[in-house]
Image 1: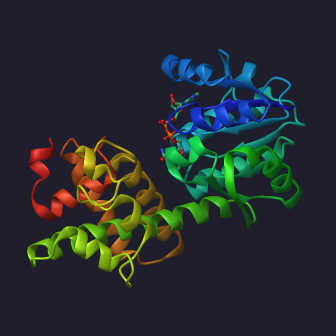
Image 2: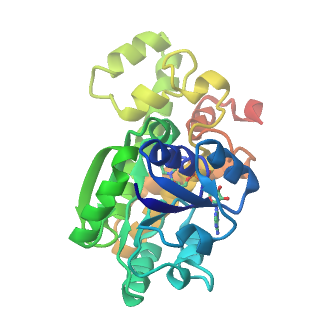
Length: 300
Ligand code: NAD
């Protein structure tokens, strides 16, 4: 049994920690939200009142926070992880954050004498609950190896990506491709219907043809075709437009920093931004189909 500190018990952190508890570890969790703390406690996490309490005597500390700002505050703040944890504690950031913040966390952790890895995940809330997430881990090889041992109960795939920040790089590029695929599904689905194709017949063709993708098989944005699609529930969120916009923003920022033209990616980000500007940021990201079929106003 290990002692695990966990900061950030939201949609992902709560089910991930439940799997660590099931594997026999003691998990001490902290979140700013009392509701999130209660939910995690129901899964067997010991709720605590501060970062310092969560990290005390921990073998490893995980963070699962919304954005780079939150991760920097939790690691680098006056009462943050670097100021309060023992130097022997391994630090693992599983949030999806920008490359610059990730580099800053690696540098600050190393300067303070800690081992730190960036280890974002793919697989969504269902993968978090099932313990089948894909982890992509960047950092120094022995720290990555040690982190992998703790990660095992939460994951189906653990992939070592290389040097510091390459885990975040993999995550950002994967999600760039995902959301472009989703936008392609939205356009293809609406056009197919307007050309007289039955929605199921078209999906049956595309799913065994060159139009196939994970987005098509999992998030197809037309109701009554794919069981896991948010379109079946009036776009109640499985992955919000807000989060999709954040991830596309990370890709656009990384592209600017590397002089890479992301014309399609930048445009897809604008589609999510339009949903957010229209008050639909909390809806599922697949609601971008409503910008294609013209039903966006009915969703508000
Ligand atoms: P969430 O908003 O549900 O949870 C984040 C939690 O962090 C919240 O409970 C919030 O109260 C807490 N928090 C924020 N600042 C804090 C602080 N200073 N101290 C303590 N707690 C703090 O988000 P989520 O869906 O769990 O996502 C977490 C990360 O995982 C994000 O970076 C997201 O992009 C990524 N991710 C999410 C999914 C998904 O399907 N939801 C999938 C893969 C990756």
